[in-house]
Length: 318
Image (tube, rainbow, N blue to C red; front, side):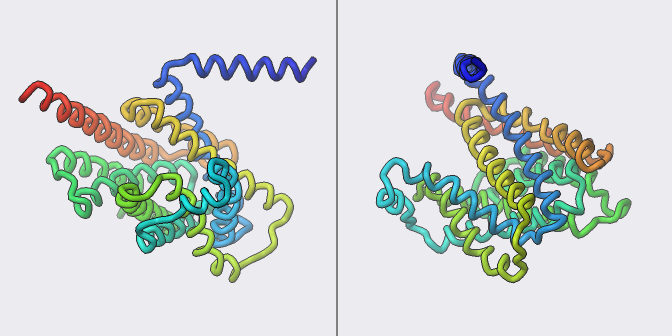
């Protein structure tokens, strides 16, 4: 009877979700993505107290590869899956994977010593670094409003780290390096997607990250305890959930709807950081994070409006 009730509950929930508008689905999925990202930070922070970041990075990459392999090979079998891994730019693919692995290592290295809300707040700098790099290296249009938004975003970052007024820890420096590498990684992905399939890029990420981090992990390896092994599996599952929910959110909804919802990451981080680790959120972190997030939201909405105007203009002959 209980089993039947459980099935009926899941069926009703699925039907209710299916019946919602695409933007409502996107909001729900974005909330889940924000929560899963914050939980990844919390689990990584816990693991980082007893395991070396090299080992965490390697095991995480390996487990994600194992989790994704059945999905990747299910369509064309082993041969078809291997065929789809073919890349026209192996060197660039390798650099992309290495930059991602290095960013992940810095993230896990910084987590134990940095409050969770600060980790998440500084994460909004990735979009700003990406925009700056796209103008400099990919030849994207350099518009005045973009530089203005960049200046406001930089001010938000300075509010958080307060150079000269508060000591800047090595963890914060590592996080900034991490988010700079994530931004570079986004630019490399943008170039790769011109010739390679996104699914193939994701699998290559896991492969290159595992290979790159293996010798470093081997040099500091300690056999995980049962508890640590469970947390490593949880970490990998949460990462997979985060990728999937964010990907589907972008597919369902408008970016202008999704980006404001990403602000909830700050709330999740403040709540989980306080409950689990006893971190009391600093006002400057929340204010600076809100400025950074607001800048990202403005950029997203402005880009969307400009793109819509470029489509309408040729149609109206203006």
